[in-house]
Length: 147
Image (cartoon, rainbow, N blue to C red; front, side, top):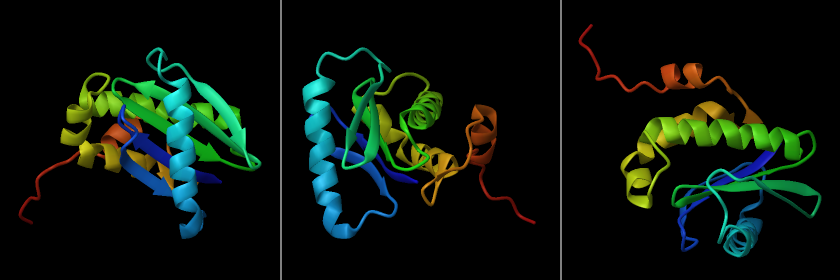
């Protein structure tokens, strides 16, 4: 199961978070743990360089994309290899939504589109879609038409 997907800025402020199957009282612990982990390791990271960690029998894969850090946490069948595929799909969808690796401002400008992409990739803790063209098609924002 995918336990969490978090996006933070360079200062460690959370931009987007999605938890699944994590009790409310543990979420603060996970937030602070992931931000500290990223602050230490992502300081001099290259764009889209993957980092892997494990904590309390769960796996964590995280990376930097532009000015945004992305963390994916999973357990059981979602090991580090599966999470690296998940984070690859997420990073490519964010780049597609923003047109380039995002600054914090660009990320927040495209917030709605990024959340739609995230909903199509991960649903209720499970990997739903990995095909970039399918995700793009499912998240296409069209104005309502009169029927």
